[in-house]
Image 1 (tube, rainbow, N blue to C red):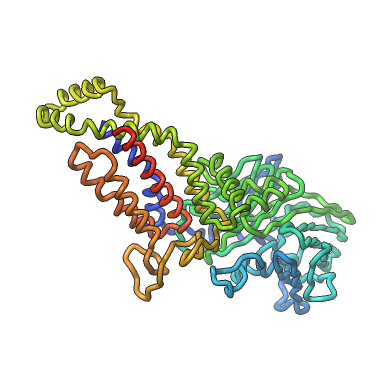
Image 2 (tube, rainbow, N blue to C red):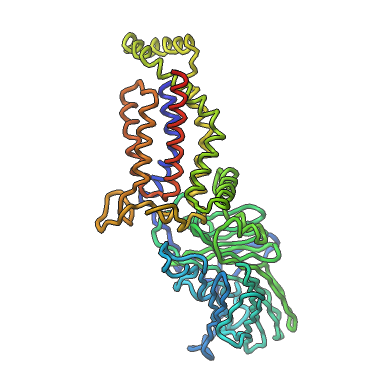
Length: 552
């Protein structure tokens, strides 16, 4: 039965060992697609098929004479709202920059506001193209904005800006943006007026782009391209793009997610369409919306409508968005447990505006829910501890006869009415909650730059008392004293001392190193996670001490 206890301990520890692998074992570098195998958005062709649409291999586009210079200098139109500032270039009518006003780059209050679109992907987000390049000159189009000013401030009323372009054949493309100062949601329409004598049969491509960090290892939470297709959430690993980079179906939304933020395109009509993904040699990740095939006769026009979202992965904010965008926040296998925990943490914060205290109170509430199971577990452990001298006598008597030893041990359990599994099963029931809380605390944007007290001014970052100029083995910068983690390791050591000793000497030695191993692993965990684990340990020690005194 001691082997069973060890297995349960390892199962309970699976979370931290799993994260150890993710944080400290070298990750395989993200495989990049070469220029010969990855189609450019402007030169790939997608042939129309019977729904659901298919996205076959690209075909060569007809050569176009690109001017050496734009016909005129493109203006940059800046729209300023209470929530964000977005810069739109007339060159392609693309989002050149997007800055979130309520979030900063670092915890320093003087840090620049958080920039969602980096300079390397400026000019790529929301760029329009067609799969068969049916509109000559579109890829080099310089639009004309309807705004009479380059800087527009919105405080109360929404405003619409139209970007128009017309080619020599009489084909006009309008991109219409509508901004509402009260929401992160932006409306976008793409209107095509075919003034030529030739029908257009093609598919629109609307691009999303994000600068990836080369060789970046993925943490426990999801980051990367995602989409809600046919009601199913698709979270796509960028390392798998060589195997599959096209998805089709009824698309609610497509997005590129980071740990705390996301950009997304939400088609107003969920019709059969597709998404196409690509990781360029410059580590620019694209997740492009590919429309169904449209047919626009000469003299006719068509229009597509979208919502855009560039903002935080906040359940409160996303729940107010259309197309089930809140499903972008998914805490994995135990999402059904993690989201109520997130709601409860935010509910507590509404009364006590300190997320550190909210984590402590949340941990206490969960501990109270599992209090009866904990009592049963610790009572069984206490009874097992009383039997240790008798088990030692059996080992001395039958040490060389394992079969006889097991038989006599089971008789001993029956005599004293002790269930050797009684201390393990209640702990197993709690494993899903541990996983759910870990994932939630890791990804909750509410903890980003949230202060606790003293030196802990960011619950999403590791705690460091003082900052050292020299590096420390196994520690990621900044370097300092991980106070919470050291205290947490001490509580694990105390908890181990209170538990019944392992009968097997090898197992006992291995368990002695567990607090040290856990302390090393936790030094790079966010302080919010360490705080949860520390409080849980303290509560467990208190409950175990109470039960042992009661059953002594």
